Image (spheres, rainbow, N blue to C red):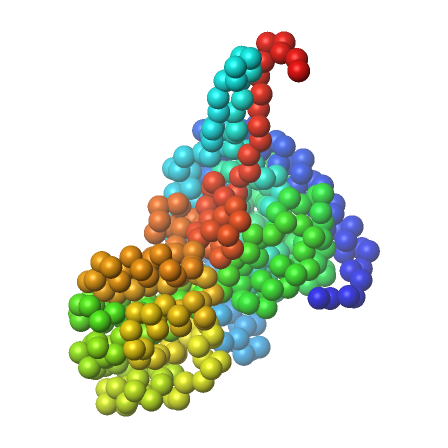
Length: 428
């Protein structure tokens, strides 16, 4: 935990933005669904119209990142080409088409004395986002914030500074064009890490902070924030191939989970295979991983299969079992049975996503019941743990905690509730 005082000018700068965001949040809370949806479509059009400027700004960030030696997985997360910009804009249109959670009655009743009582979804207020080199988060957070009636304050990583500035500039200009308060979307561009610290300690001005990034960033926000935090976690995701797994299905799920996109938190980082299935499935799995250029961090038996298939391999270490590689690397072990697989997953899971491949319904039920993670999949790729794939539209993050929100978070998770009571003169 940092003990260095935050400079007063940085604190005042962030607090001034937060105060203006609170004003904007109160105004957003008055908008109807049709007004919010129209605003979101306008924001999407504005992003599309700014594609050339955004791609040019992103090229600046990529050049700086390459000069600084950023690893390839971070550069991939940072990259916005024209197609990705269009996808980001489309995500806003998807959010516009979703139901509005604000005003939803969660539960309600009429008491014996005639008092009507109901619990209603309402916006959080001001939501802070602290994240790394993922400029798509900038637009996702802005869009989900607006739809759920929240003003957002964004603290993106320095690696995406130019891209984020171009995106937020386009979004704020569009809000002004529509006659809406541009302080509904704010970007911290000054103060560096101190600005992030000021944001997560602005209790009373900021209602919620959500971190997205690596383990170090998340740990810092969770331990240093005085503002409530929804913890989004790293993804040490396992695929367990059970004795009853169908071979071709196992090969496809393992390959897709690991290689579809390595730099994301729902990519598989660990492979477990039941000993009774090893001889049948591992030659084909290893051949596919070898073809994709995956390095297998394997135990003795797994390494033997990797070598036979021509896959790059190294001896596994205890540290590998807990590593989120975010690269073409995977830890891999042969286990004796389902019990051993569940025990291993429970010891090393980050609580994000775990998958089993099996035709045995009893094994599937045990795995889904005993494995403690935000998402547990049966006979499907770990890459499906995603707000968009779940039909939520763009997600704000994937929570690995157990309070309020767990798994992909979208509109409902950006609301809280209040109790509204209506009477006709009742007294107690």
